[in-house]
Image (cartoon, rainbow, N blue to C red):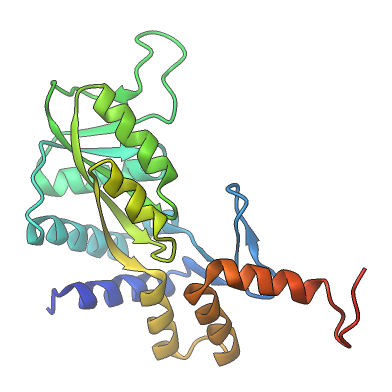
Amino acid sequence: MDDSASAVARATARMLLDIKAVAFRPDDPFSFTSGRVSPVYVDCRKIISHPAERSRIIALATDLVRREALAFDAVAGGETAGIPFAAWIADRLDLPMLYVRKQPKGFGRMAQIEGDMPEGWRVLLVEDLATDAGTKLAFVDALRRAGAVVTDAFVVFHYGIFPASVERLAAIGVRLHALATWRDVLAEARAARGFPAAVLDEIGDYLGDPDGWVARRSARAATGADGTRGP
């Protein structure tokens, strides 16, 4: 099997399309809690219900870890979507597993890191996906405050269209690793010919300039089909 990064990205993108974890909706975009509007959506949580694809993706993840020679003592999943992926990766690598809460517990030890973690352990942070890396920053901070050394984060899917995601992590000394991005999914969708070409062209426009696409869509929505100003 071709284990190059591009082949891994294509295989991951194909699996996400096969299990219908990907949605393209340029005419009725998704609104996220961050306030962003997007014509694309990926639900990596669907992977957990598909054993064959799940096993292959975890194999690709552990191969990436070995190929890039990442060194760590434990794998930590971010609450909640990262927990199953962290557990499967830790199991494949025969390493301890932890998980990171979004907030400390409001009782008992007030713990934010669950599991046994000696001071100074090197920890790989795992989540399902990354957009602008906001939650990754919070999880890394929690791990470091608990005494972990964190230099790498892994996600199954990286949006790959917001430079800030990589830049914000790099600024705190963390490298982001992923199996696939939206551009990989778009390429596989074009190859599969399972979506109308016009839809994929619109998605391509968004991926090339997300903020510009949103601005253009807003302008179209505010203008009637005949060029007059809408309500």
